[in-house]
Image (cartoon, rainbow, N blue to C red; front, top):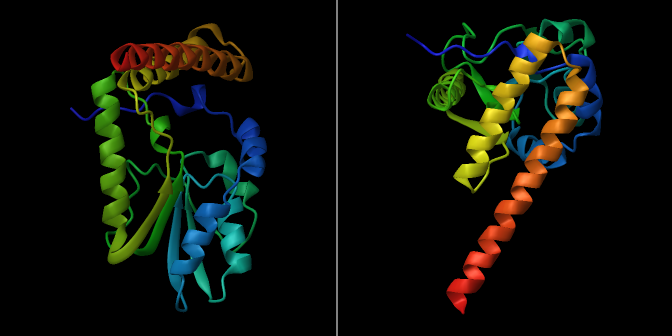
Length: 209
């Protein structure tokens, strides 16, 4: 049986994310994609593109005519797209129904860590499937440009998964404010990371001694 993603509405808030999306720096990814647009009518897909800020910047700065698509699971963004030329596809990358070899360029930013399932192993399966789908819908010889936060420490990775799952449970069972949960998660992860960094430094110092 294929793993299921936990209810995204419990851990994502489109209104709060709009503020984050505006503040997010897309310059590096934007420049990388613009360099790949070298002819007319290239088709570009942004997976999890929210309100389309990134795609709108591509439309404004591209020297060529392009066709842009926002593959976004949250329907709340459909009427908040920054440009009428953005084709909004209200689907998950995990179940998108898009034919293969369709896009010249596929891109996404910080999407994989939202694909949380009921356990760590199933979460990895979902993330792998998402990547496979991105490759499937991109033309052979096309390009995939993405940014994703990763942790060099397996321990931090496991903790992040557990906290994300716990946040989902808190919101669904206790109806705790989403913003409060985010702040608590940030403080907790920062604290754990500082402990691990300190431990790693002390261990290495002892080895060198």
